[in-house]
Image (cartoon, rainbow, N blue to C red):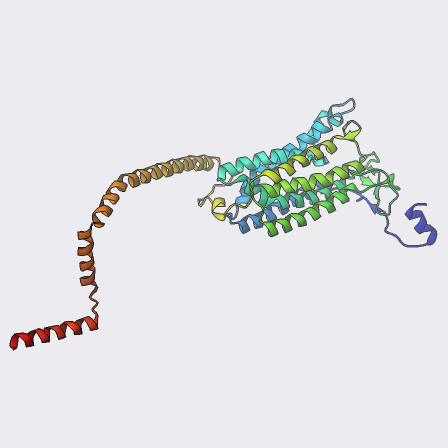
Length: 387
């Protein structure tokens, strides 16, 4: 007998099944307002907000996280969509697929590994432009990225996607059919009607909870051990992949399989091993605040002319610094023989005595007892001469 059947037979109250939202899209005039898009945007805002606070606390300049995000976010969205389309290609290019649907990102389908990969490339470009160390930047934004992923899972809940196998557990998720205004089946844009089709494992909820726990763990470990040089970002990747591996074993929605396992299961395991290896072998310690602050005004990412001028000025400044360092080195080398000769002259006995006399005369200090002895000697001498 299942827990739910046992509870019903005894009349006990148990946690009801989790109902799916009746709809995930609201029409505001001619514009559809999609819950999935809202969750993605809120996640990005939360990641930038938390990353900015952490970056400033580490010694970075205010506004730099948003600057780099202007590069990283578009790259991340494109990468996430490319990974999803590549791993679920049959949905778009299979026998009954529609290739143009691959561009409908608002219908869901973002692979986190593709988003992190291309998003990292975008962040690298932004960090190069603003002369920011990428590993330190990754450490600052890592908890925020995991927080964004947790918020994004709510979008999967509204879309009725990424769920697990059928279950009779009390916290199971109810899946409904959705219909458009004409009564046609439209699971993505329609409104729920009738009894639920089935009850499934709410894997979106499992991953959401795991991600929030991971945010807390990352913040605690970073505060306690002051992790740097990209190692906290690697730890974020490892934490996420560890939980995602087990969530994938519970999922039953359509996906590409390899050797009987979902492709994301293999991706989770491989990326987890790589992240742990980096965490163990990367340089330990944390960057100093001076290493995070270029100390110059930064143009906005969309100011292309200013960005080009910024890059040219940075090259000139770097060249000037190198030339100044070489000039200082040459001057120091040329003055070393003169300093040695002056020290040798000042070290001779005659010079020492003259220097001592000069110092004693310039000091103006006198010993009262010595002066009294001199006066007595003069008195005695004058008495002898007088006698």
